Length: 304
Image (cartoon, rainbow, N blue to C red; front, side, top):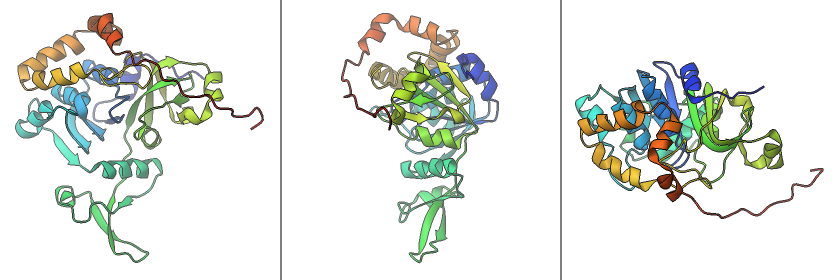
């Protein structure tokens, strides 16, 4: 059964006011197209979950969609601060923002626990850290095998996960390659999963390379075909990271007025991703071409 939906329908159907939403992807595969559609639909009171909030959540928080942020590292990678999130935390602009902070491994543990339906995930890296004092959800339990106290973090099970990938079939069987991050665990931990892909392929393509299928269709609710949907982040083999945008956002986001003007022009002012790409221009898109570096074919064996 086909799970194909357009972006507007997928967001309207699965992202509701007050929901917890994880738009994951570790530096790559960050679905800005979905984030912008959430802003356009003026969703409110969301809990945004992500290991590295990056520009995508800075823009969403600037638009007032969120009441809480659950995260680990926070920043504009390689550039500096996320000024919109800082304004929300320090000055409640455009609205107050609650934060819940973990280390990277703490968030990894939460996703693993959510995917495995476990009560918690143990990790030793909080021993000697100040993080437990800043986050009451980080607790310590006695190791039943005798090694002493060990930190634990609770599972996280987002209401909706939105994950970008290279390709999927219409049943939602999704293939990724490159820097994978925690996409698989996020998909298995979430109540609903929206997969956004660069291209739709036939089931035969998926079956020819089964080990590349990171997310099975059985956990996917919707498949959205949205080329360049992760811009300005990158998708391995399809387009490179647009560093111009990351650098520009540092200047734009420092001021509330210039941030609002950017949202008016690049989010509210375009109907969808196709209009966004037309505004970006083909010349800019062509500059992001990744070049070719093909993997070697492997023989799975006809009867394996």
